[in-house]
Image 1 (tube, one colour):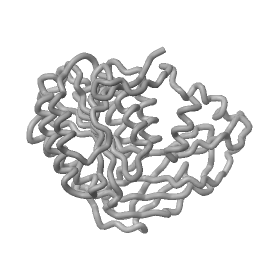
Image 2 (cartoon, helix red, strand yellow):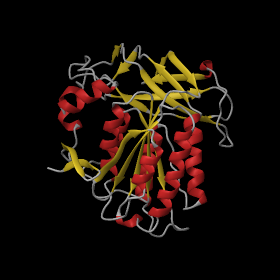
Image 3 (spheres, helix red, strand yellow):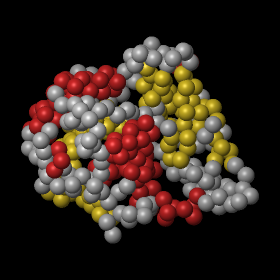
Image 4 (tube, helix red, strand yellow):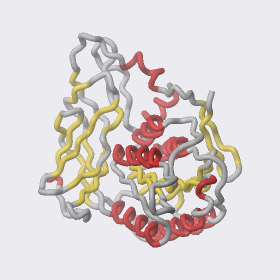
Length: 340
């Protein structure tokens, strides 16, 4: 049995027992669909939140849209937007994950310097309730700081980082997402790494599911220390890009120095220029898959929308009737994890 867990600044905090086969197989009987079953229409009372970024054809952020400019569908069924906020002032909970595996040793100092400047800019402006939790990961995951607004404390932890051993990227995303589930407001995972996963107990699908259950947007920052593809983990980049697009984020491929600083500035700009859409699912066709597909559209020519592509909700059971409801709220997510 593989294990996935972390330590906090040298002290073992808690561990989760996980099976490499994943938790979905254990729940399969709940979600299997009889061959002749017809789709079921259900009303779900849980509020589904979708953080959205809109850009024009030139890549510039669009800030002046109204509620009427957006349309959203759940499993293909149009939904009524119940909550709409422009340039939302909701507090941010940012999980900053820094790769400290052996392959990062040469670049780590420059990454730490840029991350320190990023955290200072993020926490000195905006909402005073914005918080950052800092994690480092190599073959294990360390939670260096729980959510705090104290930039000096985060900066002090960053200075202690050094590179060694393998890369448990998926475990880091999975475990940070568990912390984010308990947070209110907008939730973001920023991953600073140089490539793919080598030592995780969790896989890509499990890490992504954990982030989606936490309603977290993933921003991978894949640092490229060389100017060509030789030696780069393209597979790792593709996996991170898939997770970013699935949660409404985007992937950056900066080199070190000023380019990395610009990336962090771009992330701050996006976080300060978002729209919050939320709806109560109604008349949603259910399938055997508890993952509901979301589509967010915006009126206007040449506008591009970034938003998560789905959430975990109700599914049909084997008889074609609704199975046990899986809430998209943190409480429901935690209960679901305990039952797996």
